[in-house]
Amino acid sequence: MSTEETIKDAIDTLIRARPGFWNRTSCGVTRSLGQIPALVDRNAYSVETSRTRILLLGGLTGYQADVDMALHALELFAGGGDALSLRIALSAVPCANPDGLRLNSAPGNGAGGIPSGVYPPEGKFFYDPEDPEKRYLWRWVCFQAPDLVLELQSGDSLTWEHNQAAQSLAPGLAAKMISGEQGFLAALGAGHPDGLGTIPGLRLTATDEQLPRELSRLFSMLRQLDVLTKSDARNALDMRRSRPKTEIAKVLATAYGHTFDPVVYTQGMPISGRLRLHQLEPGGEDPVPDITSLLERFATGGVPLDLAPSALASVVWADELADATGEARYNDLIIQAADRFESVGQGSAPKPCDPDFRTEDLFMSGAILGRAFKLTGNNKYTGILANFLLDGKIQQSHGLFWHCRSAPYYWGRGNGFAAMGLAESLTYLPEDQAQRPAITAMYSRLMESLRRLQHPSGLLNQVLDVPGSYLEFTATCMMGYAMARGLRLGFLSADFRASVDLAWQAVAERVDDVGSVVDGCVSTGVQNNVREYLDRPAIFGFDDRSGGMALWFAVEMERLDRGI
Image (cartoon, rainbow, N blue to C red; front, side, top):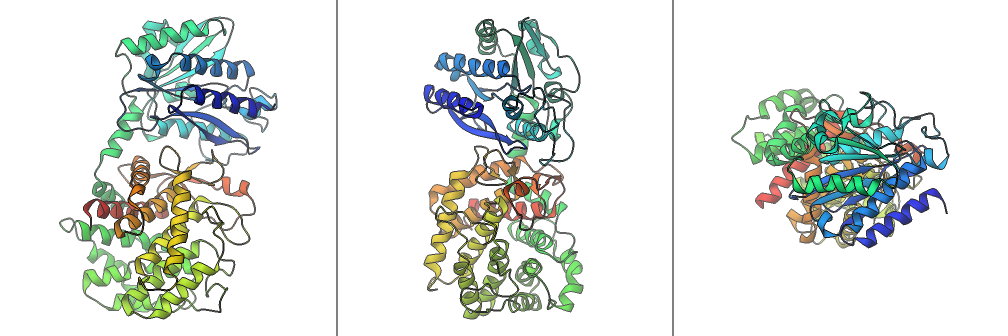
């Protein structure tokens, strides 16, 4: 039996031992496309839980003895019954360096990296050719924000060590300050990791025989004394999450939607979002004068003839600006953009869409052709749109979409484009449209599949059928928007509310007070293989695409809450 199978079997045995408490997942992907296994408590991402959240970390070194110790610790915890599990929410990464273990290259990972080396990692998220494990583990732990990280290492002499944030636990364990300032635990315990706050960390080095006694000491201390409160990182996420949706939307509207160069949907969406927010909150500062000034040159010149669909969709703000100003000339931009879509026959993508039926074009066409029908009542627009949605045949039987006909990969944002495209289309397609039932069925199958694949944090993975691929911001916003729109307009069943609320929780946690976001995939064309999708860089900071999508999601959620 392989190392991966052994760990998987051990985790599955633990899940069976405590049914309803744990789920098996992955927290990263190695260079060999192996998954970094994780065991996640049901309350690992819960807003309300009073249970102390602990993350058990083993095998960062890649040594078998350390992995065995972590699995033994989980068995001991499971054997402790309700006395432990009702008070402590224990999650675990029992083998954080599976390639090092498998290749017998510990403490390295076989790709030239050392996952137990210097932290925090900088740059190359999540495509570092030597040390991807560091990037995955760092981000995953920081945004899970446990109250304590407990690292286990096998050794002949008993030692407890603590990081700077865990000083309150030191006396009860006779722990000493952790050696080195650049290890994983030391980096978690100082400063503001990932812009959040510190996470207490302990390292226990012991023999397997000493482990039960030492864990019992720790758990008894945590049960009986209020020595461990919420981590600073968890408090930071609580504060972000507790902001009203309109407050987060205002942060995003301040950061994004103030340029229209280049002419592309990533600039148009946040401009639209600013207008939508003002419609909801008319008492705030009116963005219309700034937006009309920003767009005057473009509006005067009209929509150029040679724009790609991604640029045609940049005018999604036009009908909203016409409503806000009373100037119908802005509506003409929608019609001009829609008239660039030209049917070239049944079974073919309309010009200028990619003839390979890329999912991006589902959104670009749905957003523009749908609005054109709303403005004109001309069925030619809905006819082109409906045929395009149905002719592509890139949705698979389980509901997910390939990126395009020649790229059979389940890219997260690719499916986000499909979700938004279908939601936008159903917003505008008339109820008596002959193809509407088939398009509604496509939307419903996709929503079911995305809900099934949604990570416990609320996010979607970069590659949907690769657990452990990074938790990606834009796909989550797009799924959330599509679900919220469906719930609000009644073409999605009410039982999806929990899923969309969870997606919003994750997005709210990943927008800071100046509009920076966490892990939005960069601009991505059709890739040649799964590795290339996994290696698309993740943006941590300012990103027009992420900001605009989050702003649409925030406003749509507020509309859903208000029932308008």
